[in-house]
Length: 225
Image 1 (tube, rainbow, N blue to C red):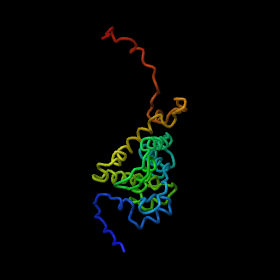
Image 2 (cartoon, rainbow, N blue to C red):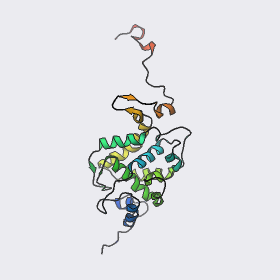
Image 3 (cartoon, rainbow, N blue to C red):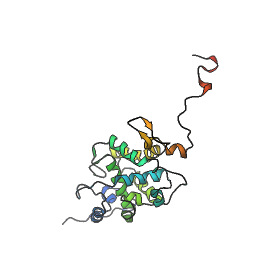
Image 4 (cartoon, rainbow, N blue to C red):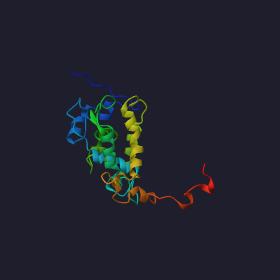
């Protein structure tokens, strides 16, 4: 018989066991389609799209279902309508084509799947009831305050220091916000053209690409060097 692992104090740094919510959570996670470590069970793919849309809504709330669920909305479109979620998936899949292994999560998943798994695992630890909700991803089912707590835990000193995971975690809020205000959601990679006015342009009142201003044509006041 394996001796039970003692519970850490409340202020202890996050460990993989804590993130998973303990071994008792594994059957629940499997039943709900949430990921668990490869060492504990066969690892299913996490619900990537819902997790990343939940992240997009967290950084730039809108009037979409993900924003409504978290309790923080906007009267305008936000990151979800901007297509930041699919853009995040594409970006992480391109940037991390190899599985992320080792501490602190031992997920053995690549790209966006690893990112989604981390968000969902910590979401379950923050609120076990996040496994139940309208979205497949537990992170997307959290309240806005719950998502804040997820990132507080992910930013704990020592959690992933000295590993590639730390770099990935640090990119999550910045990249999601950047893509929400970018043209990525409506950029056609085949034609190199926009298919619509980007949401980020509308909500930031950006007037679009300019061809320059007449007062800056040529040299200023005859100065040429």
